[in-house]
Image (cartoon, rainbow, N blue to C red; front, side, top):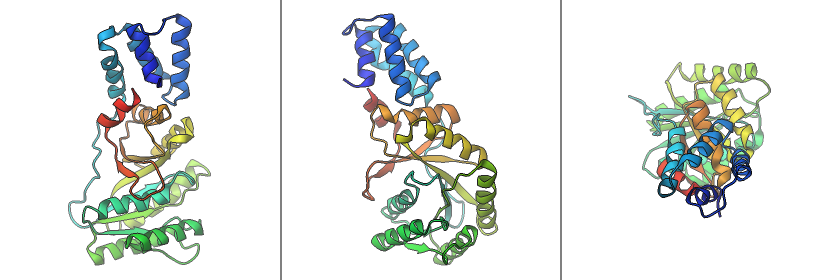
Length: 278
């Protein structure tokens, strides 16, 4: 029985209810990365719910935790839409750039990718390999090239090609907040000499738990994060981090990835996600 299934069983009387039992369930919610505030709200709603409204009571609390902001990619009024993809190393950031590019190209949109994580040669090679597989252009620089310079070249290339989207990978280093602000701020300023940045998407690995929420807070304070890509989100209780981020920061999850294939990527749909938690 799943985590929320146990709560519903208690509400309907299918499982003996005791104070210790409710405490155990609240601990389980905390362990599933929902965070203390949301966990307490769920338990409170569950304890006061009528048996016939068990599922509705839980769904109501979960839905209230979600951001009300737009989950669509923000579009440029004229010219290419520029998307910066940010996040720490190891979250699947570079792969998410490729998956997003593929998703958009499947909608018959022209895309240019930029290998802006120049501090990791492997990231540049990885994105170039993806570009070859997907037949999508990748702009890159010399070894250890200035990330802002690569981003600038990509924007110029995107304009020349009249691309619909320019997706820019960025360095995943997170030494401290001042470094992060300086580095990403420089990239954004250089791009905006030519085109505005419509989206800054933060990639979070769902399996990192509450550390994912910490990362989201740091990046949100450093740059204007407009949306989140959650990787390794499989709809299990572990996926509670998605709700914790939306409730805590009011940043909408726009896409989810779960798997290695380029097609393992889709828009985040709360109406599909929430019932799977039950």
